[in-house]
Amino acid sequence: MSPMKLCVPGDRLCSTEDCMPGTGVYLRHGYIYSSLAGYVLRKNEGEELPVISVVRETEAQLLPDVGAIVTCKVTSINPRFAKVHILYVGSTPLKDRFRGTIRKEDVRATEKDRVCF
Image (cartoon, rainbow, N blue to C red; front, side, top):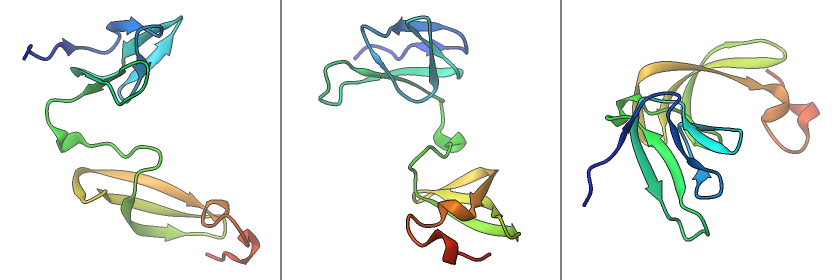
């Protein structure tokens, strides 16, 4: 097993022809670059191209991602949105506090006019 490759923000990792972008990376001019300092991780998830991601040394700095299930504490409410502090991502507690906003329109897919804060 080869040692994991370290990278810093801005390191060019591969071409978009060779890999698909995952978390901790960004696209620019046909190449995938690191947006974090950490380890390069390639996963072949049954797709044509492997997914390349950058992960930090410890998962203590777990970041909420789009589509993640989170547990929040509501800190304030107004007629348009609720402000929250994100406490857990999945079943993992966060060491750092993240803030979020839940808009009235995002609470449910139907009957949005019946949502009241």
